[in-house]
Image 1 (tube, rainbow, N blue to C red):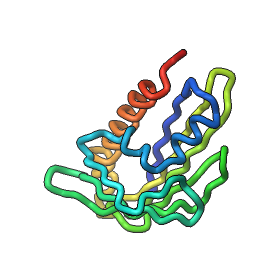
Image 2: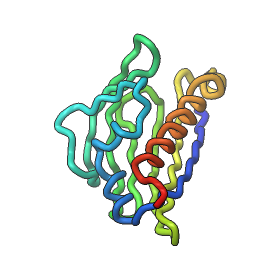
Image 3: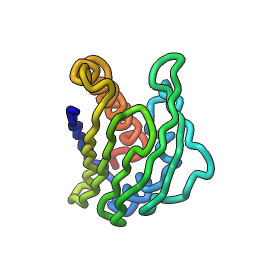
Length: 153
């Protein structure tokens, strides 16, 4: 199994508490995910992330292929970081750490994702052609949406 790593950072020009509250609210995922992914959070949708929370959703991976994705928030340190891990879904392995660091001009949001893909024998090809590009597209879109939600003063 090949374990891939994806990292992203964004300085958000807003207070630490504001940024934490936004990212720790699962419904806000709908505001920062590309519409073509047709993300649907399945009820009940929690108000805030908390350790042990299981959150099911549906997402369109490719035209004509929707997948159920079940996430567990395995670690939550309020005003610091949280981790979501896939329990069921399209990846062989998924671990996503969201970290938040106060800065003079706002809040630095850091994402580190470790993931593995199916099928194992051609996972590097699948990553190069599809998975890595999809993650990059998602984070480019998220960056644009965060810039609209938290505009420069």
